[in-house]
Length: 286
Image (tube, rainbow, N blue to C red; front, side):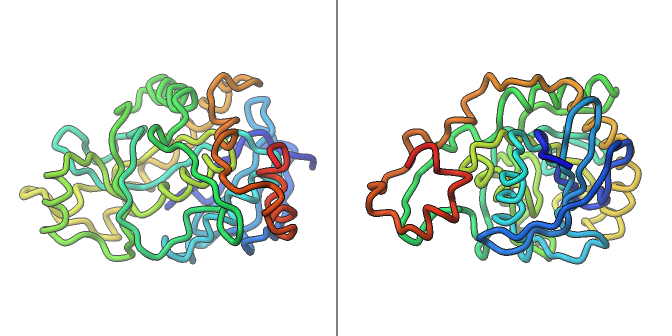
């Protein structure tokens, strides 16, 4: 099947990508273990891409149980330079309504039990993460959403919680007081790891509920999330397809050189096993 240039991560309700041609599947094992599922390879809108369901087919992996490192490393092994992610979120803002789409440009981390870096074990690196989303990719995704006449919000802060339980009312009110726009259980680790892998990353958040803060709306439930995801799934896939068609061959952003000045460890001091395992990420620098 060859390699892919674009990766798509499907979230809740997005377990496959219709319209792929020249399709096939590949199972990968990474230095960090196995990804969530097999990668579906194919061609869409003239681009070669790899699709991965974040929670596995059948939605069998909790947000905390997702092997984010293996998922992103697998994309790197396939040659992916850009990742488009779809995720379900709750709204913490009056102006962001269920069934809206948000293209977040900031994240806040409230997780506690997740691996969020490829580094360690004798190799130290600190990537810049002030702007965690690729601005070029996010702009193209926003344009695609507008082109599909979606109610889209460009920019916003996504707070990532551990889950799997939804927020208490007190937590929901606290996050609103911080000025957070949307809340979810995934995406943050993907963005961090994509930056370390020098892969462009942008997420499209499908709003399903008002979390637990809204006095006139029922607190979020799994049934409500599923119902709204199902209503928005077809639109989300059209937006992804349109975004793919807008992506140029060459990158003009800085994502592809995120590690250039980030590695602190003397190359001579890096363990050979680590050099070998992380070769797809670091070989051009060490």
